[in-house]
View (cartoon, rainbow, N blue to C red):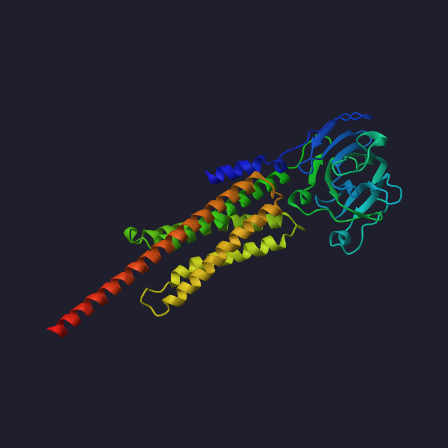
Length: 401
């Protein structure tokens, strides 16, 4: 049930679906085709002219800051940011008017070794312009919509283009600064056949893999393992169930680790399919949780008998590694929501409710355990006092006799 609910929520969250509708008509031109882009509520419209291999294209995006930038470009070789020939619009630092300049996104920009400087492009841009929605009276502000037009000469008989778009918060002089690095901002790439209008399915495949990766890991590392830990801590003291608690604990933990291994493997594959996108903290926490989880699993093979002198050391190790794995798993689930751009989503809300419920159950069981412990301690004390009292009475009676 939890799997189905999380899958539905992730699939239908606004960040995961098309949230704007493309148009083919503007105030100045009509285009043949249009496409709603998968991120940033952006869209494009275009007309391709096969007889001279020219492409009329309009990009529709929005600013996220009054001093920010919006741009799009074409990568002639591969679907990635590095190598993109871009047109970027932003407010002129001197006059405040909207300007549109060409930029080449080379590897030095990717690693932020040098500022991004405007330079002529090596693709044939015949015309280009940018206007704000609302005409000359419009101002640049957070949420302001912009239209960037260009007519480009393509290579004859090469109708597939790698289209890249993005937006940022600041411009230093005439150098746009790095854009945000959420999963949506890093996924602003698609491949389009401008003749047929078809798009590559790689983005959709990646999106599906990310959803499966997130759901599996949230259920395994973030839910099943904590339940397994609670099972061992609070059920082992119930004498009426015998060894059932152990089998329940081992079964839940093994299920969580094996399911988490599948999610971890999908994460490794996502890393291979997303070159240049590095989520350092999320990846490190994932590797740490994975290693601790399997250390716990393999430790079962070396579990000493209850009478063995090393049993207490094994228990200390088992408790420490187990709780560390649970904490890392839950923390990394929240980190995963941040990476996927789902920090304000219903999926995260559902997960928070699940974790909160576990914490509530844990507190209730902990209080109950202490109540039982204190009650037993009091009963033992009364028994000892009663026993000592009976012995004293017998001793005094024998002395009188």
